[in-house]
Image (cartoon, rainbow, N blue to C red; front, top):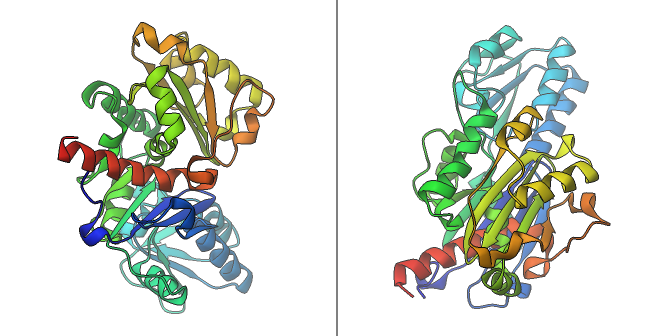
Amino acid sequence: MRALTPDNAPVLCLDIGSGTQDVLLYFPDREVENCPKLVLPAPALVLARRIRELTAQGKALHLYGQNMGGGFGGAVRAHLAAGLPVSCTESAAYSLADDLDALRAKGHVITPDCPDGAAALFCADYDPAFWAAALDALGLPRPGLVAACAQDHGFHPGQSNRLGRFRLWERLLVEAGGQPESLLYEVVPPEFTRLADLQRAIGGGPVCDTGAAAVLGGLFEPSIRARALDRGLTLVNIGNSHTVAFLVFHGRIWGVFEHHTGLLDADRLWAQLERFRTGRLGFEEVFEDRGHGTMRLEPPADARGFAPTLVLGPRRGLLAGHAVEFPAPGGDMMLTGAFGLVEGLRLRAQGAAGC
């Protein structure tokens, strides 16, 4: 198998979620247990806290930088509701909404320049200066490659973002043969503007959707990978914002289900998963339930129904008490997405080497 980086240098892997960013500095020549790991607040949460501080101080706010996760939107709305000015550059504005005219109608001023007296805050999922300083302070080497994942609904003017995002999974199942590593992008599809900005920020390395990284993270665990060769498994990632489930067998994906975690309770989610893996849950039902949708291909008979259900993610406790398992890929469930980036790189290198 090819090395993941030139000279086998470390890979900085970041899973940027809505609650946390989960970080792995992966050294290919070390046991994964001896690789440095961090679980930090998501950049959007840090930005929201700074905005609330400015609101308390009665200061005008100017946002600049890149399209990033929009988890700070509530703090911006509260700032406006307090009668305080909000301005932003166009690129930063896309973190809050695709429709800039709608933002203007709500009181946002979109301008390339910071108004006099306003406090300027930088928007970015990845700040190279921060990570250079953090690694230096920890006495850790700079990586040979940065890989990152984040959730991107995509830019779909005049269309439903939920429907637009689900086309990601349709392409995975229909065009990419269900190979999850195909969603580790070297060239980002044009609609995924957040991932494109993230890729530029990390220096051009591969980027991935968090859902795809989660299933790859499950397969990073050798025992799970081996079980999925013998029979079909259901891998579920219950994140802070989204719940995504995959039907996995023989190294490929046979079905995808995606919903919003906040709209689900335990019994409702379990009932939908039961019908999803047996092919009795339709796309329209999930979409009309304000989820993203579901799609399932007809699996081979030896998949045997995908009954074993493995649950990952920070909200995995939602399914406690049901017939599920709670694995910890790489020994740390919170790093599943970061391990998934390593697994995607491994699978791609394996494919390129023809082994």
